[in-house]
Image (cartoon, rainbow, N blue to C red; front, side):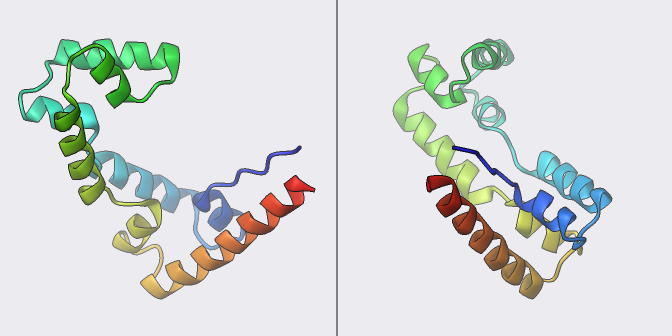
Length: 130
């Protein structure tokens, strides 16, 4: 069964809606503004920089989620991880939202293109299942 994963940014680029520069600007904005779980835990004093490095090295080797490793290694408690995940989710800026924030798309255009993208994803998934 072929897999046709296409990210929203690739969809917009392929359809000449945004440029590579705008994708770069949006990803840079996300990188600067979307704090990672480890950063949030360090800010609270729950993880040291060494703890974070240990988790990241393990993550590279296993592809496990940061929080799963932190729990397994007893570096974080479940309640702490839940709090971090909630804060991360509440403050996370998605790619489409970021495009609006940097002025690459209007909010109305974002909604239109997300609908088009989601229709394509559903159609592609149905084709793959045949």
